[in-house]
Image (cartoon, rainbow, N blue to C red; front, side, top):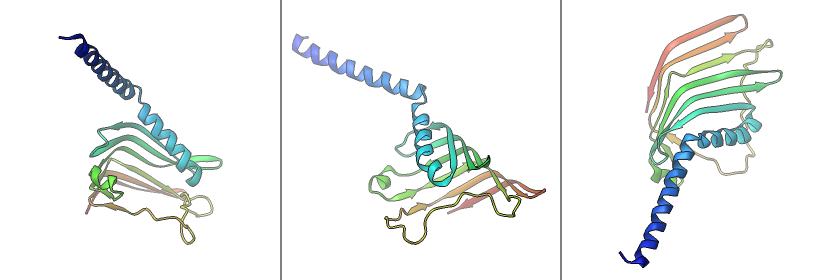
Length: 174
């Protein structure tokens, strides 16, 4: 093989090797989970008094992914209360829809979620205040979920000294 073909071939192999090693390091270091957790903390926590953590992200972002060990906590002085824990949630979509700014989720499925609702001593529900309403001024983001599934959920409602619990709650909606 001529020398003028060997140098570009070696350069191409080196670039491919660097990209493959970079992807492996990115996956093994859990950089993506750390980045998503940091972005959630910056944007959601400050606006809604929520702390959302994601343990692991699996799958490809082309057609869907799975979030594992997702916890949503409500930060209310002086303590923090867990609102929900999702051992696993899977999201399926068509990348083409997102590319064209159509926020359509083909399937959203929660596996074994645990939901917690509680009233404080004054009788108010301990839930985050959701911003919005009149005078928002910006464009509204509209989502469509074509199939929603909840498998084996548990719901706990605290009413002062009483607690109501429901187990193995399932929902399939489309």
